[in-house]
Image (spheres, protein in one colour):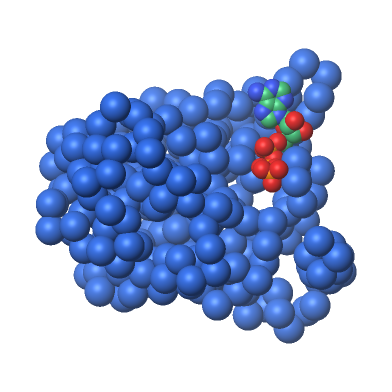
Length: 239
Ligand SMILES: Nc1ncnc2c1ncn2[C@@H]1O[C@H](COP(=O)(O)OP(=O)(O)OP(=O)(O)O)[C@@H](O)[C@H]1O
């Protein structure tokens, strides 16, 4: 059997007495585009941080491409892209200087791909990072995560600051880039808005109070009309 692109083995996370992620095991198959949904505080960012090796789990293990997230090899780092919710950008650089600087850490990075991404997202390359709006900072994060053409992409609320047009462009770009590749990219994209994701995802994982309550192909989820999903739709409509 193929190694799953992403795996959790009895992973749990607590801060003192506060349990953030209940013990969870799951496999994300290679090439899946997974929507990771749940209400505020459900544990989405924590889970993505465990996968990216930024937060050590309290027990169990997260792994990426067969490699323990807490001990990622250089080869696996090269194949991983991350958009986090708290971007750590370098304000004194211009957008392009920043892109080139991060690109220098990746063998697969190309200037051509980076320029294309900036163009597609309408991101000015000459602007100082310190002068970017919140939405443009998010676009820069997206370019930084995609320009080395990662095989596995972890996106934590990547469109939350974008306007509706830029949201649509980004989702399209994500999809088009996938189909152009020899091997489809594995993507986990978190949102508390299912409406951002439903056109692009192949699988859905839903967290509720740190517990996985849905983990299934999107087709099946739609057929079964899960109650947990109905509740999410209701809260979205009320927002
Ligand atoms: N460093 C930390 N120390 C203590 N508690 C934390 C820490 N990081 C996250 N938490 C708690 O973990 C829980 C899950 O937070 P997390 O950010 O993972 O949720 P989320 O689903 O991504 O929420 P949102 O949609 O609001 O971003 C929350 O109760 C949060 O307060």
